[in-house]
Length: 334
Ligand SMILES: [Zn+2]
Image 1 (cartoon, helix red, strand yellow):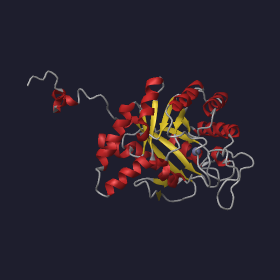
Image 2: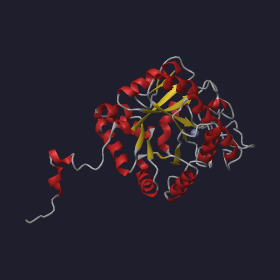
Image 3: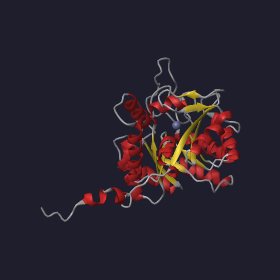
Image 4: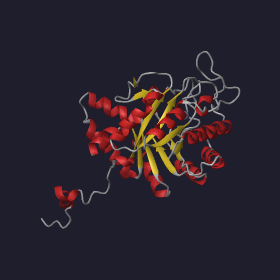
């Protein structure tokens, strides 16, 4: 047998690290943190084992826990003390994210990224202002089956929200609503208000995915009626993602995010290939919950599958990964 090519030569123990193409570092990871203005105590999130909603008073302590693992960045999500039709608490100076951001940036070295969206702040749970004439009915259905959110009216709310986060000290803002024109509107407003050094991580390709289920438990942001398929992307579409991303790049997006991650690695790879900006991927709550559920049954090894998942997301082309595994994996890596 004369085999010239034996790839197994480079899989031996002392050389495999030398030829490894992809590495995972704690500094690649961003840990989502849920701050809840309606509670005085930490509340476990049932469908996301190990994660909690924390009161504003505990936000600094929560972020310090993250930093101890070697993860240096957090993404803040807020649960406001009250909701209304427009989601006005999203841009309140004393809002939940604003308060938490002020405390965290004053007392820690964490890099604070804030979620800019309205769905946690509107009583109907949609990512913006509803179009006139669309109302919830007794049966929970919509009177008008066409669009749910008034795109252009929502831009104003997003502008105000992003600037209020920057004013509170946010290092980066992350608009997640898939509102057309959101990146440009936010960039203009940030620049006008003197925050031209605050980057925007745009949820450039966000799919209408069934993998978000557990997050809606965590952030209390499930739509009261209908769904988000009129503003989030159709899981069937890949070329459309390139168009979405291109629009955000033209509007000044600094970091391009794909969400979810594992079922959309082709999109991560496409964005990596087609654009120069850093690519982020959101390893979402359902991707986290399913590994936990299988591990609980003894069917999968949690640490191994979690690490392999994150490695595959990096291999596909993501520079940074938002993940509920951030702390666990960072501790493993150390
Ligand atoms: Zn939203």
